Length: 240
Image (cartoon, rainbow, N blue to C red):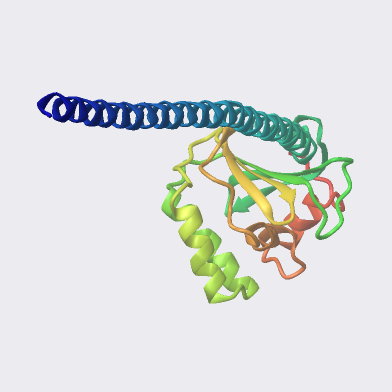
């Protein structure tokens, strides 16, 4: 009886152990399967992401490189165009031909000699480029030059607004002059003009519209010095 009970108990324990072993085996297999599946998934994702990232980087880099190359080409073209425009816009003033010259007299003093020059030696009103060159024979403070210029603008009826604008421009750059000094206005066209003092440029180009009112002092039919105008236009000779 005892023996049968023990045997039955051992059989039950063995059965329980077998069931437990089976469960452990199933659980182990499941863990291995999940681990392998996860590893494979990670490997696939990594395999997909690596080429994609590299490909995206290469594509982006190539696109930026193309854009940079294009910008460099446009920059070179713009620089070349600017150089060509500058070359064509800046004539060789040294090769200009004289239209005429005359002297400004005050009592028995010669104050200055003015010379008008153009590309071909002919002058037509409103045409440019041109040069008005003034060589001084006397020592004159800049304030007196400005005052004399204002007197002429008032004589010609230049608007007060322009008078103030032009006065502000010349007040800031005109120097005192002594015998032998030259004050030169070069007019490129389209209202662009600049003063030179003894061959050196003075500050920035003058405001647009300045050259017309400044040249009118000598070249307008309403000038206060009609004889000097005729000399500058080559209509009257000047022994000077």
